[in-house]
Amino acid sequence: MILSAFTEKYSKIQKRIITSAVIDTNGMSLPARVQWDTGATATCVSKEVVSKLKMVPIGKVNVHTPSGIGTMNQYIINIILNNEIMFKNWIVMDSEIGKQKMDVLIGMDIISNGDFALSNYEGRTQFSFRIPSQEHIEYKREYLF
Image (tube, rainbow, N blue to C red; front, side):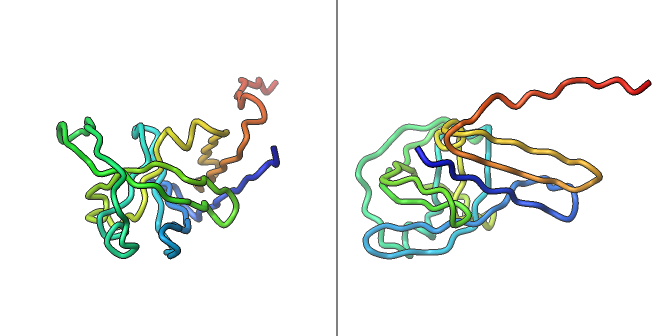
């Protein structure tokens, strides 16, 4: 498998990890604003993206959210993250994330396929993702004497 990776560098500490993507389905493509969420089990697309790309549901799924239990439509998309990493024929569900100015919420279904690293050194957030996983990322305490 070919290694694909990207690093996103921010000028200050971030409360949300936002990157770019392209959503491709039904012969149409759309640039998308993406938020990474390790607390989400599955990847979601906004209802606005569903409408713009004229997406057709392939089924329904019951989901548990912080707001309660609901039933969401499922769709198949290709998603290209930061023009580098592609997930083909990925099953996603629709969501109200558009209200938060998000097109896609990346969940653990995608994150668990690779290595996810976040640091905030010198007051600047840096986020990296690579696929496939290469090794465990382990931080060790170093002593200065």
